[in-house]
Image (cartoon, rainbow, N blue to C red; front, top):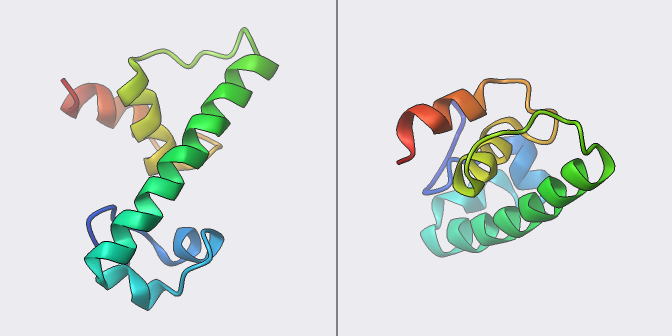
Length: 88
């Protein structure tokens, strides 16, 4: 895959956060970007559940954050199932 670094960023996510993808090989930059992404995903999670109270978004807080990291806001690539399988 094209995923790089500790947080396994793909080019699209790197660009979205304001980084060149080549910068993701620097662990400090990668972790800085990862913290920004986690913060953004917390806001996305809040907005999803606030705007759609009936939205099925079960799982622990950590599982839901992982799902957003893996899938993005559309949650369409199985991230929640992976999280439930691997996060304890």
